[in-house]
Image (cartoon, rainbow, N blue to C red):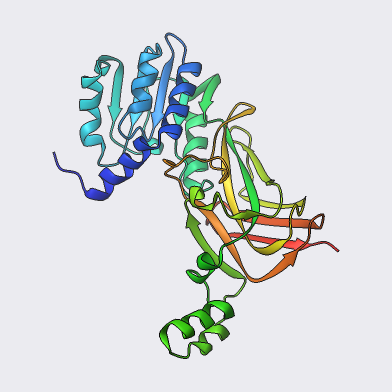
Length: 306
C-alpha cells in the first residue's frame, strides 16, 4: 500500500502531537456512553472512532474522503473493532446515515481554526445526523489574541524594515536602501508554531476575540473590539491569534504560546504591523479583529487609547 509523503506526514504530525490526541481521546471516553451511535467526521487513521467503540458505542460511522482511508479499515481490524465500525469513504456532506446519532465527533480544526469548512461541515452534521439532545465534540471554540513584541530576527524574515535593510547592507556590502521604501500596506501575515513564540515578549494579557458555540453560532463573520491594558513597555509589533477548543463550558485544549507543548502540530496566525509603536505599562490597548467565514479574509489591529 502506497501513500503520498504529504499524506503520511500530515497524519504522523497529528498522532505525534500527544497533547492534542490524548486530549481528544479523554474527551471521547468521557462523552460516549454504552449503546451510543457515533459518527466520526474526518476520521483519518480512525483513532477517535476506535476509542468511541472501546468506550462502549454500539456502532460508529467513520467518514473519511482522503487517501488515508486506504489503511483505516485495516487499523479497525487490527484493533478488534471492525464489527462495530463502518468506514464510509466520502465527504460527510454527501453521506446519508440510516438513522440519527447520539454523538458527532468532528476534529476539523486546522491552522486557521475558523475556516469555513469547520462551520459548514459541523452545521450540516448537527442538522442531518445529530439526535435532539445529542452531544458534539468539540462543542465550540474560543479565539484569543495576544499583543507581542517580536524578536528583530523574526521581523527581518518577514518585512523590509529600515533596521533590517541596514543589517543586510552591512553584511553583504551592497546598498539595499530602496527596499526600505517598499510598502507593506497594513503589515504582514504568517502562520507560526506558537511554541516558537513562547519567549517572545507579551505586552498585555490575552484578549478574547470570539466565543463560538457550534450549535448556535449563525453569523458569517466576526467583528470585535476588545480592550486590554499594556503590562510592560515594548514595541508593539503584532498580535498572535490562537484558540481554545471547548467541551461544553470548559476548554480542553489550547494553543496559547505560553503553555503549548513542544509536540504541538498546529500553527497560529500572526499579524505583524507595518508601523509598530512603543507602548507603556498601564496604557489601554484596543484590539480589533475581523474575520469573514465565507472567504477566510481577516484583519487584526491594535489601537492605543490616550
